[in-house]
Length: 542
Image (cartoon, rainbow, N blue to C red; front, side, top):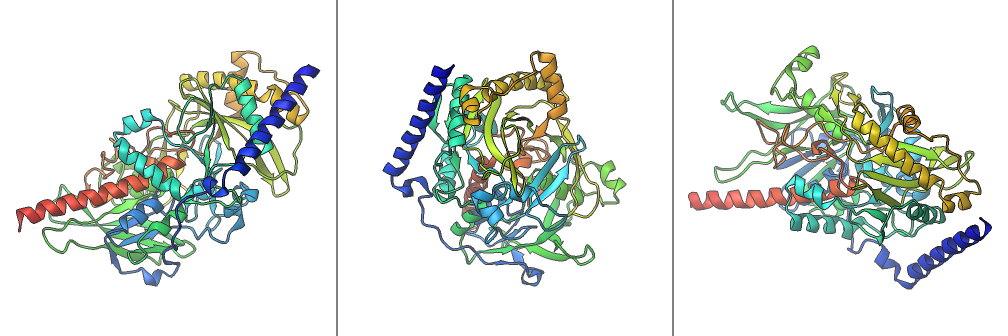
């Protein structure tokens, strides 16, 4: 055992020295976003600068998908971007890596950058409430979706690649591994997470180092930074404004509902004081109208549809919400990736937080394992290794609790409700224990973890008792049920949803990269569609 410890000590030290050499050998600029950044567009919390005005596009939610979507659409059209939270800039809890996770500790009802919610399963969770959305409060791990996910989505592969590259050139960096991340890397390899893939943005089996939205100086670059690519003359960002509902208009066709604009309130204001913003109307018959696009996230987008009268008639009538469209699948098919985390330190420490930089992907992409140092208070941390089930079968439902859009809806994910998920969790815990009890982890921490989970039945019980979230929940407005392949809401003209609520499964190790890509991808697709339609109509009406 002593000889093995010496061998491990040398391998960890040599691995760290090699990474340090490579890091110093290459110019630091190669590890950081490559494109020169522009200026952020005009932002305001003054609702009078927006109320009563019209825009070609209104994007609801300045989050992970909404910011790149709004920036892209502004290249040719006027855009209003509505964000219920404030600005991330100047907030060290958001921007500085050394405070990673602090924003999840102290939350309040209306203004904190993270909004707590607890599912009816009893699992604590959170959602972003700040420009940049969840990319402002997460671990910053950046990894693309698998080829299989892209195939299932029916996206054009070359356009997807271009959209990913656009994002990566602006905000993604190559991380420098910390000692603990190096230990996790060796622990995963010892546990059989092979092959070793080094640094890669692709979602591939084995052990890999992912990209990061933290640069080499430890500064986070959220999706809000992508607004620097917007046309500043075509975009207006309204902060601290919460959309109450969508405004519809009758066009004389009882079978078709059209969108006129949005109704919103100040996030810290009264429900009785509402404001409105509208879509520009087409100038002539050769013009094609714009859209209200919901990018409010897997909780926010289905919530807004329901508050607007789009959903199951009986549920809406119970809350006295006028019914507009009977789309029964709004709020359905909600999923969250079950997470199991084990603490590998013996007591709380006071270390600097460390978001994950390394991931192990195994069993045909079914399990994903990462390690991090997580703050439990402002002066205490725990070192843990976490795993998630990538493709859970169990699904739940989102329902309204209130007509106040600032209140969280009720959501149930039914974690491990399906027997297949419980079986998978037991298998995942076995893998997790192998990493947690590996020699690199034991050597680094100075103690070897003991496990009493010797049988499948014990692991199943452990899963039921300890299931948590990986914060990768999705669904509620899924493609094929609520929106079509162009992300247009069925039966409504001028309304789309572009965010994680449209996903049937969570892409990659972390959906953040694919959500940013989706905003850019769909934005470009909309621009091309409008050019094509305008061209056809001009030919028909010269």
